[in-house]
Image 1: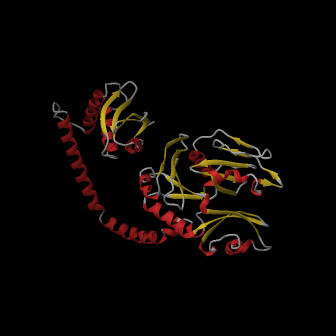
Image 2: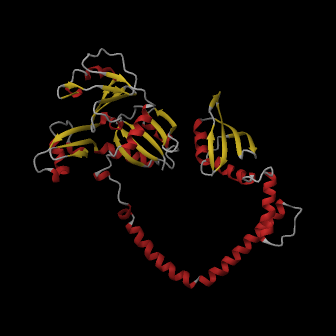
Length: 404
């Protein structure tokens, strides 16, 4: 898949939920927005259709830490992690889900979050049709640097340090970062590159804060999430192996296939007879359609004659340009419009020389245009024009071209 839906989630279900649809093939944002809370998540179901979903967890709801490993503990690391962190975490460690991000002989970088909450997130998204393939803390989707990187999202600032550390700070508390040791390394201040405009803060001269030009923050986080290998879908949340998950189904299918094979061999003669009858029925129906479409032609000597006459008539209707027949275009348009019942066509114009169809339409919401664009893209190369709202109506256009 080349299109992804990214959703940023918080344990505060009334907090705004930022989302974005990104196309790696077109290298552009398809759609983006902000929901008012978890009760509005169902609005993303259509955007998740045929797209993989990235869930970014607010860094407020995760613990990112680097822990020192006792000698010889590497093999038992997974079972030891809760006990290595229990003195630093207020919550019962048995209620947390841990993921090891990186480790060496002496240290390990881990991320932890409430197990029940993560399970609730994934279950609710799955129920709404959102196929989550990656989960990670939002701060680890920021650009990676030897210094600090930061970005503002909503009323919070995300600050990343190194490969696997980061934190989330309320905007009004951002100035408190400067005097802390967290922004230092070997006693020296780390410079900070911000992908959002810097707030008006009184900052000491020892630390350099600079603003960097950047795209939409959710676009920045989506691109970072696609590049990183970090995911919290581990342990109990690791997707089941397709082979193991469907092995029992495959066994039953194999047995059924053998049985059906025996039946098919015995019924082969009967099937051939039925196929011939079906072919005759198709031929009869084709001739009926031919005579109905071309009432002046009643004699049909061969099947090739029928195809040739229909093709000639199709080319005539397309302007005689010898290009892609207009009838084939028009037959595919209604099935695409079935994606929504709220869209009204204002005009359809076919340009035989340029081999394109231009459609002017209106609807009562922007979502209808996205649904129709997705359906059109199954049969055409689609260029969607600018959408504009006039009163209660949203006006827009599509240019449909033949798929190469």
